[in-house]
Image (cartoon, rainbow over all chains, first blue to last red; front, side, top):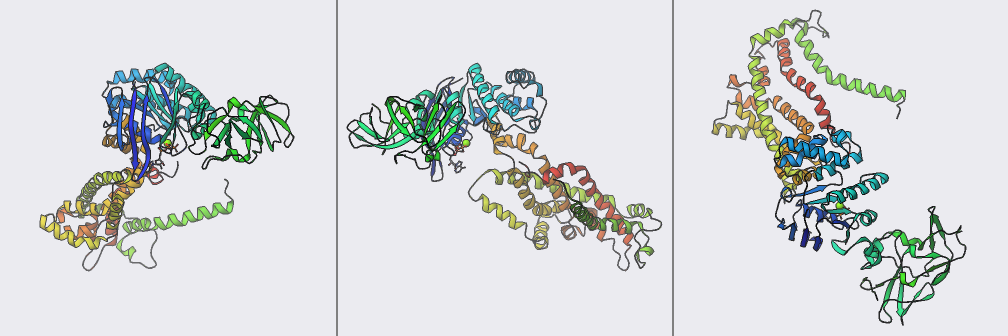
Length: 364
Length: 276
Ligand SMILES: Nc1ncnc2c1ncn2[C@@H]1O[C@H](COP(=O)(O)OP(=O)(O)OP(=O)(O)O)[C@@H](O)[C@H]1O
Ligand SMILES: [Mg+2]
């Protein structure tokens, strides 16, 4: 187990900089998740950590060793790949033991360790099978077995669950979390799934276009996003965003004057964020009436889509979730009909404010 | 999906015609070998001799140094296959994996080399081999055949390696292999079907050669390959075609046997990458 330190690592492919200078400290035993949209450089960062891809500059330390120029096999890390990358010509036992064999361990010791790892992951009954005779979940376990059997300083995982069906993914997510608790190895985990990030991570690194947007614990990301991108990325359905202008301590939202809890100069253009789940059906501190043009019922809760008084702010390149209107996610309401007038409310303390120019959060 | 009767008839009809076309020369070779000279010159032709004459095989085997010819063909083919595979495995792997500047044009350059006909290359090769004293030696064939084979096999293997996910080598490297170690311990074992198909292809190319053998070895009867040897069975005035055919059966048999034994691998090698 070890602490990982990344100092000013960057990566260029020709003239394109896919990773901007990147610094990050992963604590001993921490479960760190890198999350971000496709193409933001998550896999690149992980491959640089593993030594499979050279960095264009910067240093990497694992434990106290500077591993920047070490070969992957000399870094004492284990990696789990998205497509598992099991060796198709070897049995499960040989797959798990391959790394030990490469390190010159005796056959007897390899066998003991493979048995132990197989037991941990519940794959001991098919040790003699070839990977092609395993199900997706079993392959995933073997890939994990290959990682834990080496007892490395760190685990690197690149979207290890994305090839599994939804149900199995939830199950394996819990299993990986449990495994991490048990073996306690420092883990860097890449995903583009925010639910995985939020549920598994000690800390989450949100990336976009090769740049770190925010590093924080899941709850902090949700409650205190540093910028508009993080605010929009975390949460489902995504945060409602409205254009507004600061006017003597208030903003005009949906035709209402709402107190502005952040200190900004009059006339500043703002983006105001309001999470769908912070909108309640019925009376509250700030009330407004709407006629939902679409009601989606998910059983225990309903998504109401309504008109945004022309204030809706859609970020270029983001998914079109907000294009159907503003969203309220209400639970325990009676029946709600489309087009029927209805009172909703929110607490101004739940609003998020961002500078429209810099897209950074403005707080009190 | 269920096929209709009409589709079935068309399918099996086409297959039958194609197989018949392919097998006819084989059949004709056997008929010729089993007939007597008199039967061969009769008109209309006889499609199956009344008394198949198997003695021709043993007579030819005794009269001509067929074992030596076969041995020479085998040695030349094994040498060419070994040399070509050693080079084209490394070259094909490099072309598949490393994006070095100029790798693409280098690949195309190798391809153009395979467009040159053997007849164009044979004279300069002859000049070179005479200078280094290889004329009359089987080594001349090993080298000459390799120049023909390597462009093909390099591209065949590059295509095969392209279908193997890089993550396998990356996993092997994380597990402690060097890049070359990952190739030998992971990539090559998985590539057995592709390697077998490629090696067999190389073997056949070498086995089938006549032009090079004739040019480099004609004055060295001890080094004659099977194809060269058979052509010397043509007499100045008459040719015993039944004897030539019997000898040709001996020459074709090894290739057929190899195909039968390797078929399992070949099918896998030819359809590699077809399924994801
Ligand atoms: N060999 C390469 N040459 C040029 N550009 C590359 C190369 N490999 C990756 N890139 C680029 O680097 C960027 C980051 O790629 P990377 O694979 O790290 O993304 P990612 O965050 O893992 O995305 P995903 O979620 O889709 O896996 C992408 O824009 C990609 O096009
Ligand atoms: Mg990726």
